[in-house]
Length: 125
Image 1 (cartoon, rainbow, N blue to C red):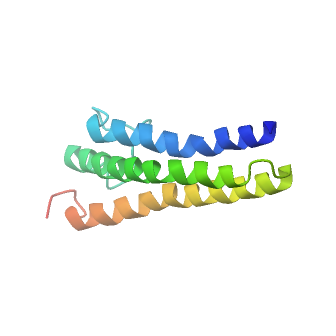
Image 2 (cartoon, rainbow, N blue to C red):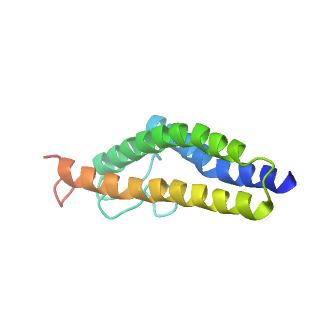
């Protein structure tokens, strides 16, 4: 049971992080374009407009994905409660992999949308 609780807590970290940072980025983008914190890609750092758009867009994506992943994660882990540690670990690893695919996939979606909304110099189309 201890390992199951550990896997539950570890698998909840990605959705909770996505919800927290997603909400934060939607409401309050980092004030200054910087190389330390925030959604940092070459196009998102072109100017203030691209910086704010990228954070709002990615924040909304992360927030929604996190809200979807949270109950799915709990449901799938509830289905394996009481199983042996190998089984729980395998299911937990698959869940984590799926969560990471959505997390990393949001970068591609944000970049595609940035390129549709802004030209290569960061001016709105």
